Image (cartoon, rainbow, N blue to C red; front, side, top):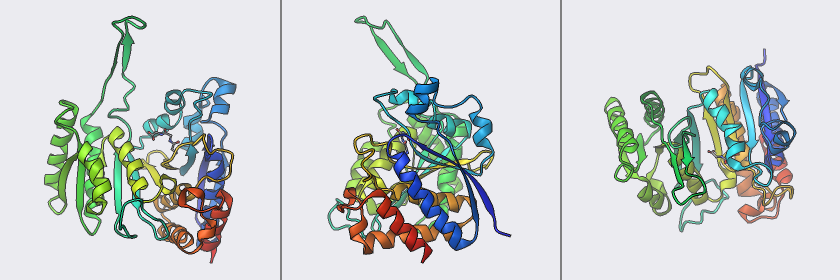
Length: 358
Ligand code: GGG
């Protein structure tokens, strides 16, 4: 009997509505090829239109509605002309990550065949690492406030929150992951010379975790030099684990070094599987190119592959990634402008889906 997966689909804002259909097209091609079923249900919340109509980003029963799905396939959120970015993000995506306890944000960075790195002399295979971003606490705390507003004494404070459970669980995930890879190398991002309370704690917990994984070669880099080394020597990285904000920055910088942020996928994972995990491209809603049909769908399609891998369909997932790489390498006429081509979102998605089905 074929397996049936129930997927909640949330296109969100901007180019989310353009790349999600291409992701679904490729997922359906993979399902057909590998003999499993996908039941998809699309939701029109978590976007600016919904906010205009309801004054909220989500309906009150969103937890019950989404909690019953096997996974969530998400596009992008953010339309600052209509709703401030911090309101839309805290009202949707960050709620999903926190309340569904998706404490790992896994973001692969890989230079694919057919994609040119802006860095000199880099070939496919030279850049291939994973950013593990802490996804439920850290600098994204929402704790703080303003006092003396509108006066010379105006003061604004925001706290960083690190809990032992929160720090240890993401470090453990990253060490396990590093231990499962051939190079067995882990770098933790820090800034413990300047951020004098939370970051030394992060270092302390990472060093303690390293003792439990003697087969993993672990080192730390301060975030400033780590960013520079992503550009200068990206080949030295294997698994990079970082706090919420540092991980967010590194996982945009890494894909930019590997060609374009348009191809970067991500998985917001609840490793305990108590709630659905969520799969989305790293990029946002890109209002500047929305509606033009030129957004790169690869980040969304690759996120779909990560979703299938998580659901227990690794062969189908690998097939999608192989199809992406073949099309980018062998069909330059279909690639989107961010990769130097003149193709459209739909043309590139259709070509990848056809390649999956061959
Ligand atoms: N598809 C990702 C997306 O919509 N991102 C919007 C954004 O601003 N995200 C910030 C974050 O991931 O912390």
